[in-house]
Length: 217
Image (cartoon, rainbow, N blue to C red; front, side, top):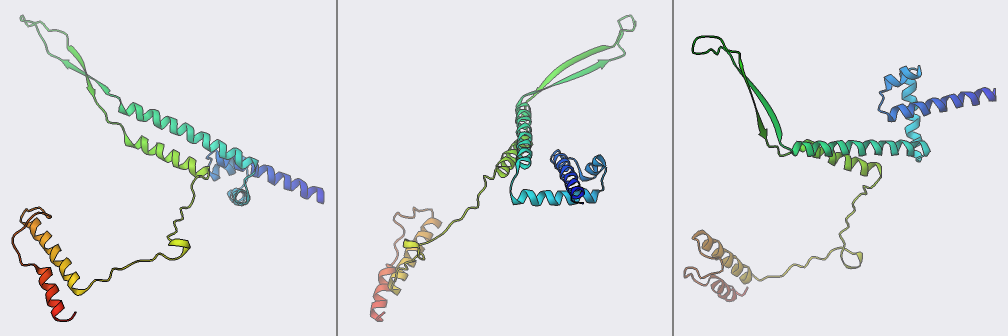
């Protein structure tokens, strides 16, 4: 009985090995089932077990599959780069024309005249190939685990909270700043430099300060 269970376990392990190889060869599940002569439900269960095994820790088979996928990405990136270079080259277009119904001065028919010419069309490159290259770079980095979560911590000195200092202004100082801002906006509207001399206006800031002092603010 123990020997039979061990033999059955070996069969399952070998079948899952075959399933994993076909899976990493991008073979769909229904085709895997046909090749191995099992049901699609069996293939689905095997893949679930394999994914759990891979998530627990990469083994030699998983590392080999990972290397195979990286090779495929490298090949795809190379093809995309070559296609990008070709899309940047000028394209030569051949044109052909035929003139029929020709005749001599005496009315004798002449054979059709065939003319051919070539035009050259410049190209700026197809950006879709660059998008494919970028995908290869990103996917390779993902497989290799190069992406790390960015954690940005905002703290003050000593790891404490950031201290915000708010300047305390008197009412007169606030009015003076508003008056200065008003002068800048008005100067820009009339086309004068914001920091240059403007039209003569009462000293609003000073007047506001005197008024506030008189009110005891």
